[in-house]
Structure formats: structure tokens, C-alpha cells
Length: 424
Image (cartoon, rainbow, N blue to C red):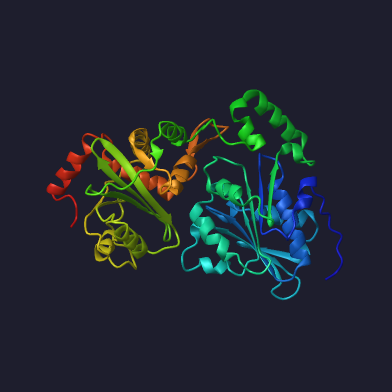
């Protein structure tokens, strides 16, 4: 390999990044340079180490354009080392030597039980926007990145204290192989005058969001969020608490079946005049029979509400989703009629205002609901939904199934069963 002068100029805080740490957590506000410094560190290691495979992850990656690949491409170009790397599709391949390493970019939500094993050969995993990382993702990812000397790096702007990444970071932060860094724009020596101007404008005109956006503090304004403030109110009213299953009371479930193997299920009961949401599960690494077994093992084989397309037979499928569930022993089900997302969210909001929700068994579902939001287009002033998590969609179906008004629900469900609206 010819000698090349490479400028790895970095912020003071980035000098602490080191291969000796199993976990590196870097959190903070906008324009702190988190991602840029991590890419510097990763490229430096990639040049120095042979056969180093690095995966750049996000919970949801709609396209390669939404990944951190462009940042790696730009850094390679800026450093004048384009001859050492070749950028193709979802990879940046090191060109020196044979099979000498690469950067690969992947959304965790796109992985299934079959291809999660493809990550086992990677020595470094860098998880961007880790505020969206679920507990299930952490449970799957951590033992998957397990080669000798492997490393997991998480970068994010903190959103809510209940988020999985904040919870995990706080659990392990005092371990000897863990590095935790909080950085903000004030720690970035390469900040442009234009960015500093934006900082001052937001400090003056947007003070309620300033601490979250620029200083990496938790979001307390809830701007654009569909459910976050309602969940805070429910918590204050002690309705997000321990909610055990009530023996002898009918179980109602609501499902959403997303891309690949992604599935989310909420489990509820109506006890007197109370709606109790007792459990939740979501995963994109399991097949349909896994969820059916979970339902039966937990004693939740009651009345199952499925999304409007669950009755359709698709190419390559052995019958519809509803038919498949019947073969697994989930015999009482109905396909929900199609309902607009806006109408469903209105019902979901009302359900949050009424329901008791188990804080432990539903913690991943609650995280998904807290993060559901729309973002405002600064040019048009209009709000646009970013992405609806499978758990949030399933919650809409649950609200629809329960028909909102608590006093009417038991009677409504009984009438539907009597009228034969449930498929048995």
C-alpha cells in the first residue's frame, strides 16, 4: 500500500474513541459532530486493520440514501483516499488486498430470522439515530456482533428517558469497557458561521425546543407527536402501571403484519368499565407460528383482530394470514375493515386517555407510540408523517376493535360473537 498523507483532524472529545471499549455511547444535540467523528474513527481503523468489516445500522432505513453511506463516501473523498475504496450500492469496499474489509449499511427492520446471521462476521457495528432502537433490536444485535475485539457504537440525540438505548446506556455506563460521551455544538471546533446563526435563531425563536435540539436534552415539547403528551398524562394519572391479566375475562388482541416478518400484537381485556392493555409483542425476526405459540402459551387465545389485508391470499402463501392462524389454533378472528390513519389515530388517542397499560410488558409498544410523529416542512408549513411503526399501527387496530366507549365494549363484543362476525 503506498503511503498517503491523511488528515484525521478531530475534536478533542473524539480522542477518547478507542478499540478497547466494547460499547461506545455518543449522545448529544444537533451539529455536535457525532457522526463525522465516528466516521473519522472508523475510516482510520479501516485503513490500519486488514479484513475489518463495519456495519452501519439504523432501526429503519427506507433507502440507502437515508443511511450514513453518503457520509462515508464524502469523507473518503475529502481525505483524498478514493483510490483505496470503491462505493457500490449499499457498500463501501476497501480496495487494498483481497477481501480486505468493507462498510455495509443496513436497516434492522429489514432483517429477518434468516438473514440476521449475515451480521455475525462484522467486527464493528455503528448504530445511528439510536433513539429509535428497540429493546428487541438490542437483544438480537448485541450477541450477534461477537467476534474477538468487536465493538458497538451508538450515536443519538436523546428523545425520552424511557427509550431502550437510554435505559441500556444507564445500565452499563460504569462498566470498564464502556465509554459514554455527551457532546453538543459547543464541542465542535469545525462549526460554520451559518450553523451558529441557526443556533442563535432557535435560541431566540424556538426556546421550548432548543434544549432538546441543540443541547441533547430530553424532548418535553412533544411538537408533532401524536401520542407522547397523552402518554405522559396517563403516566401522571398512574394508568401506566402494573396491569395483570384478569382470570375469567375475555382476551382481545390486535395485530399488524408489516414488511418481511415484522409483526406487532397488543393484548387487552375489558374488566367492568376499565380497558386494560396487558401485553405487547413485536419482532421482525420471527415467523407467524412463533406469535401463535406465544399467544397460546400466554393464555391469550381469545378474539383476534387482524389488519384489513389479512384475509387476502397472496402469491406464494398457503392461504391468507387469517387461514394460517386457524391452522395454528387461533380460530376466533376477524379482519378489520379499512379505516384511514387519521381516523384510527383519533380512536387511538381516545384509548390512551382511558386505558390502563402495563408499563413492563408493553414497554416496547409504549416506546413506539411515544416516537410516532409528523414533521413540519419549513417551506410549506404542512406536517407530514415520518413513518408508522408496526406497533403503532396495531394500536390503531386495537382502538378500532375496542370501539372506544368502555361501557359499550363488552356488549358490542358479545353481540358480534353472537352474530357470527367472528370467524371460528
